[in-house]
Amino acid sequence: MRVLIFGDANVDVTVDWRRVEAGLRKLSEKNRDILLDNIEASKESGNDIEYYLPARTKELSRFFNSLNPKIKLGGCGAIKARTMALLGHDVVFYSWVGNDGNGGLVLKELSKAGVDISHVKVSGKTCETYNLFDRQKPRLAFSFWENKLSLSPFIKAVKKEKPDLVLLTGAHRLRKGLGYAKLPGAYVFTGSFASYTKKEIKAKYKTDLSHSILVSNDAEIMQLSGLDPISGIAFLPNSTIVMHGIGETAVKRGCNIMITGTGRLDQSKVVEKTGIGDVWESVFLSSVGNLEKAPQKRIIKSMKLATKAAKQRMLTGRFP
Image (cartoon, rainbow, N blue to C red; front, side, top):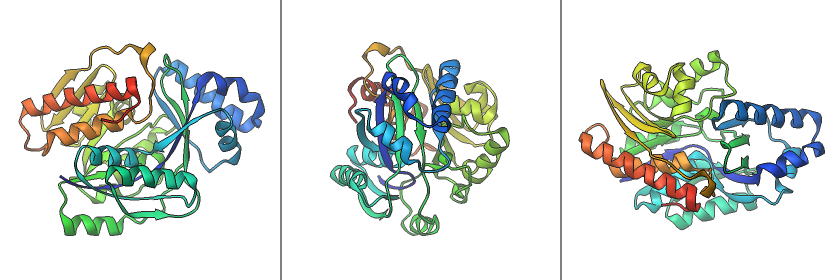
């Protein structure tokens, strides 16, 4: 399949949760409070949380990079581009990275996987996402991302080339609408809305998520709908929704909702918590092909295959 992807790229800076808590006294009161508030929210909710920083912060960059981090390619768009290319698809990625070592890392990993990076802008400093890792806790992340690309050239390319798949990522990281709803029929991916107000979620849905094939996880469906995950995908107006979660995965196609369980995972053996949803989504889309026309058996099989790949990512840290 030919796949065009527009969205986010950054590096994931992952640090042991205990190192972060032990070093909090080194931070300014403002940044210490941001981390402490979200650590508490994560413990209370039991869900993954990504807090969107209002601006790039040198202090947090220095802090997390001083704690013996693992630094890897990140960003919903970049991880999907890499995974889809590794699965054998013809992938073109529209994004941007910084003119620095981290930007070079992202471009090298994408190019090595076979992604067409000719539309990746190189400018400024690569964005970083700071992840707190603990096997027994949900993923907690702090990120800043800005969009340096106009959507117009991408829309023109889609209309001209008519690719098999169009993926739109990263909109959740910016409260300002990116206009993804201008491409009806595209797959648009959500992310954590934990720090959004109800008004902001409503506005984000209208500008970026409303006229598309919605792809989300169970917690994000609950944030968007205010209901439990299955009721939520039934309630949301999108005619097609793909949802993955800890306990179950589901696909809504018209009035039909197909559900599969995910089985158990030994949390004590988990080595990676970044990119899990991206791997699930990439493997599902790669396997199912044309979701609108795929028979139900193929959709169910693709959900199960995607769940297996996501678990492999968590237990080994590797991509499919």
